[in-house]
Image (tube, rainbow, N blue to C red; front, top):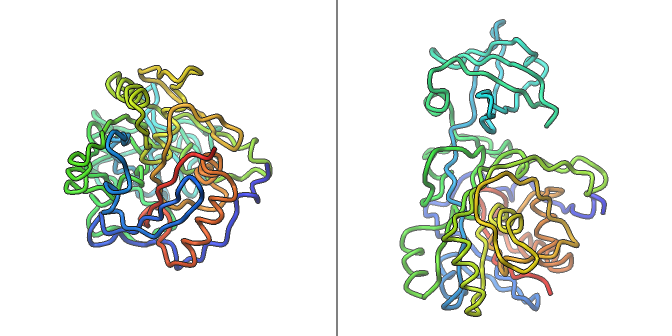
Length: 343
């Protein structure tokens, strides 16, 4: 497969630059299993699902991962914190990378110092970084800002809008699981009243999720590891849903990647914690997920390739053409679509 097979024209003005005033006021493009397309609203989600269906969400919390500093010569340099390594150093992306040579010290605010330890092979801007702080995670949270994607050109007035309402635990993601940004307490309550189940897992979003495909052949694209946790209760809820004839709906591509990583050929799920570098592309046999709620993705991205694998080439192209002609808002802060696995 060629990366150009997953390209489409995306005008800059269609990329959402800020969230809507109300999270659940976004539009929802419903794509039926037979390819039929309907324009709906996210608030209608409970009516689009059936009693006995199960939503699975990624409850990771986004860290304030973007650090703005200066090097020893006073030149601006930015670090995007991806993950903490077992050694205690951190995987980061540096910009501009040419300034982040091993031994370089970056001053971030008045209190935090970061030393570039090594160049990382994971990405051309990848660096291993050591932070001079007793509790580096807390220091990063104090000094950093929300890690908005580079196609969003201004900071959010409310940084919490780049966090799902159900995020929990220690901040560990370098980007939001954006399909979940639409949920509000009233929508979740209506889902419960409609008999739709709710289960959680965690994947800390890193480079594997948002790195663009730069290779000519899709299969040559390197997927980096991201840490996940699939609780026993969630695995059991998914298996019970399928036994009862319900449908499992992943809220976001990160959820699909965890569940397909943990699914065995017989359909049972292996609960636990680990890391995944699973790259889902056309030809993948899905074993755990029936439906997908997802935002609209960038051209030539691994997320768009996953969508194509899930619903088929014709259906994703038809859906995106419809969304573009219908003034849907694209990418992280934009609208969403609900689709079902191709046959």
